[in-house]
Image (cartoon, rainbow, N blue to C red; front, side, top):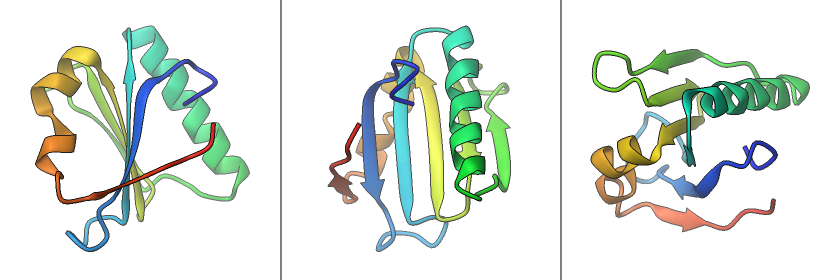
Length: 103
């Protein structure tokens, strides 16, 4: 995500709040072209680490500006600024612990 200039990356530990995943990674992109590049980069990086996606959802019905990649314990959300403000996942998961990460 960082190599593709994704902005405002947040890592949330949601393991004590839900059984759907342990972590959410949320990042903001500026365009659908950048979103595709970020998704491709994430898939490549995870594959190199031996991790394969369980599913990928494009939220086309509700928003063409949000894609989710499910790696089981880690769920990655790539969103445009507008979608991120509208869905406000950080507020939905406000009880989650924010973790620091290295670029």
